[in-house]
Length: 179
Image: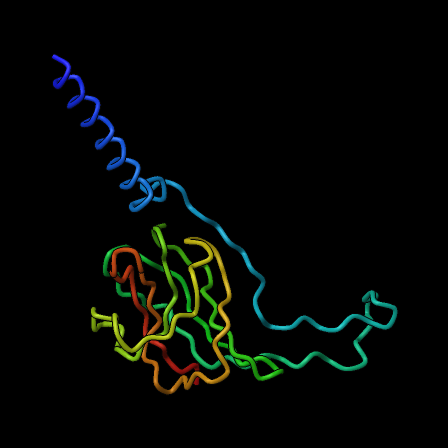
C-alpha cells in the first residue's frame, strides 16, 4: 500500500515539473496576449524656436536634417505566422541606420528576434548568415531597431522575424531599395 502511494506522489511531482517546464518553454499565454509598441519614427522633428518652444508661424533658425530612406517594403512571406506591415531602413543625419517596422502585426511568441538575413526572403532556411538586431519589441505597432555601424547592408537580402526558441521563421520580407 505504501509503495503505491509513494509512486502516486512521485508521479504527481514529475507531472508538475513537466507541466511547469512546458509553461516556461512554450509560454502559451503569448498566443492570446498581444504586445503593442508605438515608437516614434527615427526621423528628427523640426528644431523648436529659441527659448525651447515653437511659436505659431516661427521657423527654426536651422532646419533639422531629414533622414534618408534607404529601403522600403511591405511584402511579407508567412512561414509560421501571418505577418503584415512595412519595413523601412533609414540613414539618419548622424550616419546611424535604423530598421523600422511600421504598422506591423504578427503573432506573439517566446524569444522572437528581428534579423537581417543574407538569404532571400523566399529561402525558408534563415539559420545561417544573419545579423540579429534584437528582440522583437512588440508583435503589433511600430518599432525601431538600430543597425550596427559596421554592418554592410549590401550583404543582406531580407528581414526575418525569427523565433529563436523553436528555430523557425515567423515571416520574412525582402530588403528592397527605396530608390
